[in-house]
Image (tube, rainbow, N blue to C red):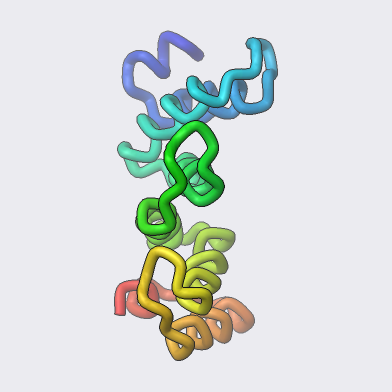
Length: 124
């Protein structure tokens, strides 16, 4: 897996990040976890993007940044990650990392309830 990750395979990079985050087969290391997640996230791996945004949202290893967290949540949401879509709506509701917008938050929540979150709603 390490060789594949080094060769640039996003799925391997994500998997390696998860191993480091959870301490599976390696010593737990959040710094290395973030680095591997970030590589995969930049290659459009939605699961990795979800982990990168969490690191920014809570300030784990990196400086806490609502704006950076929102950016990565939105990227994952645009790829259909439902957890990220839900979080984007929450961030609009709270005004964290983005201007507060109750209408957008409501639209995203409603779309999630009926299972129809679309790119058009996310990018509006």
